[in-house]
Length: 392
Image 1 (spheres, rainbow, N blue to C red):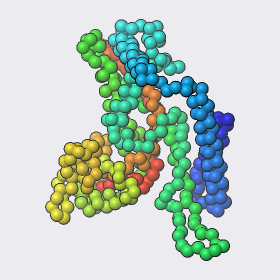
Image 2: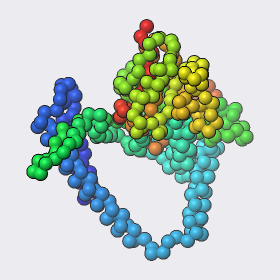
Image 3: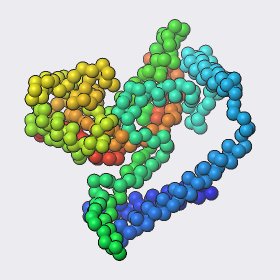
Image 4: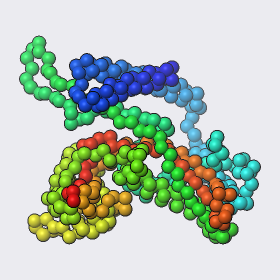
């Protein structure tokens, strides 16, 4: 039942995307017929969602009815938690032994789960890598995250384009409002891989923390790559669009100097309703340049604040520095400001980890490669803004 409903829901979303795609490709407004079609499809989608929710609740209720009436005791919960900890410990020991070469392939198959392509997946290690990725990159952590694989389409209404009229209503006359523009964003599944190479002289050293090195090195590489693709996509094919489609901006008057007025304008480009979770994102050299800026009363705009998430604030908001943001130069995007919930990040929380022995044997190294499925795209222009330096 739920599978049929899901198929109907996906069909409705595809039809919506086709209508919107035709309008965008032809660069025109919606016709009255198209507006009626979208409204009808939206009503059908709402009805399907209600049915899916009802089926889900029913299945949950039935599943709960099959469970024992009594709640698990504290001892049972502790035993379950201890079992999970032991499982994680055994996985990590097995993976470490496999990397060091003291565990053969057959035993590795027994102690660790494997994917169809033969990649070893110690769940506890994968979870540690994922957790650290989002600790390293607050931009990725603050994005609107979706844990799915494959293509994902997110429909939404652009609030800035909705036209709502308010006035006195006489009996027998209905209030009138123009319809808002229906739009959507699509997220694909792109694979990103990180390689950690470990010298064999370190591997044989039992005091060397092999697992810690793999987790830290792989998480660092993946976090910085994902962050860069969100802020400044560098791939010539622009697979990940990230913030490259952001048009809400302030253009500086100079190619090399940022003024206080321009920062004020940039901050006000984001509506007050989205200011609560807003942050500044810039290159470290840009932060250094802003340290000298003062307001009309002679107070420095940028202040060190140990209570701030990143140790520095600008106009009361946290300042995060990243090497992935462009430095001050003609035509560059040098500062981003706003709530990064405006970025949709599709990140499948499954990491394929595979040990490569022969590939780096000539270098006397063992390689450990991890791949993740992700994509990122701007989903709400109103939540973010950027400062662009004047063209040269």
